[in-house]
Length: 84
Image (cartoon, rainbow, N blue to C red; front, top):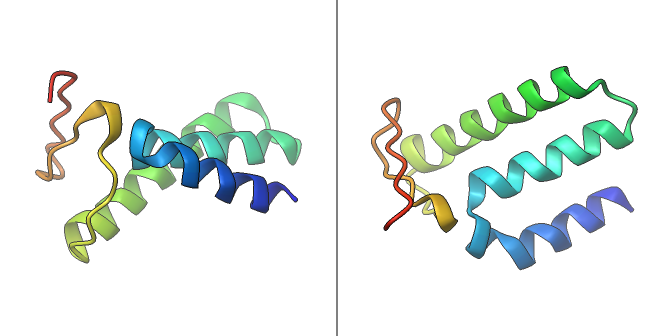
């Protein structure tokens, strides 16, 4: 049921929040629901989200939702702009 809820959350929020924030939130909440500790869950969720972004957007050239952060594709020098 957690995976289904995560997929529904991703579908409805990815365009607005963007891939990085949405995937971080989904992983972080799932880790906490599986009795993970707060700090390791946050760190590992952030690392996995950034790694997945790097692989899909930079290596495989898959366009991912940018969301409110407006992340430019210059990894490893990720440029974040709040003004588009």
